[in-house]
Length: 117
Image (cartoon, rainbow, N blue to C red; front, side, top):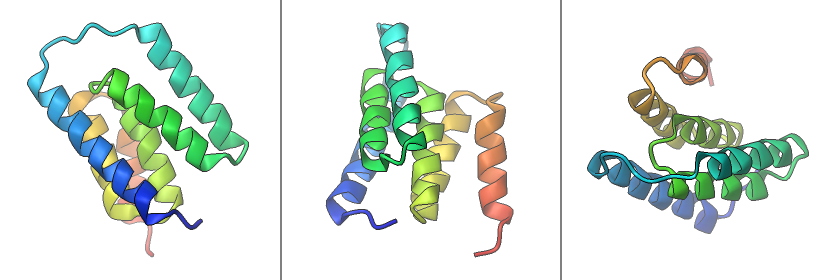
């Protein structure tokens, strides 16, 4: 899958900004239902092959709640699918940092790191 350089730069910038925000914010006021809706919609879009639109939904969820490990994991899955292993690894690691017991993030990171190129 070919991603435009602008999209890849945008993903990296938003992930970095969200990680910084998560580190600096103690307990943000978040409407968790809206974040959940964005994640569900992004997942549905990804399953239908609308990868760029799915990424947008996941990034919106991250902007809404930069402490949501599920959003980082979903971003990581799309980046992994696009072949961008370094950014996928960073997203999975951020998900684990935010939610240390998040099994899916651990699994995805391990699977990606142990799979030969």
